[in-house]
Amino acid sequence: MPEFLPVVDKNDKVLRYLPSKLIHAQELRHREIVVYLIDATGKILVQKRDGGYFDHSVAGHVRKGESYLQAALREVKEEVDLTLTARDLKCLGKFYHRTLSPQKGYHNDRFFTLYVVKDPVALSSLRINKHELESIKPLSIKQIQTIMRKNPKKCKGGFLISFPLLLKQRQKGRLKMLPPHFSGGSRGVSPANLP
Image (tube, rainbow, N blue to C red; front, side):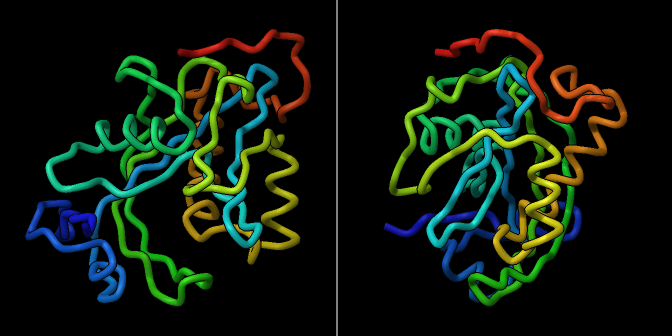
């Protein structure tokens, strides 16, 4: 059964609903979410997708009838089997971007809302959905920046867009787990296990 998504206008107002494959084939504007998970050492949990591509901790489409927040909670559960509530997420803003997806050969035209899980997430608490992703690994900010600089083609287009936005929020002091002076080394804090 096809996944129906809202097609939206330049103000993020829903125009109609279409299957996701048709939306991407016609390069229509739609909605997505991005969620970053950060461990107790300040490392960001990064996905490795099929083909070895690096990607956000969690990302996905907003489906027909869902809010951005509902989609974020669903995608976290689907991709890494972590059950969260709205109180567990911090919204860092809604952004618009149109990027060429070199891996898929089309432009991805979307609004996306960027979230971060407020508390540290232990890698051991996650159960990876192998239908969705290959693996997930903790990387420091410097490691991610090096990968993006030296081999951007190994990163998904959305990751190349959302990660710098995450760092901008960090510079504004909006991420307590990633203070502006911190680059993801050990802080001597034990990981928290979320339900």
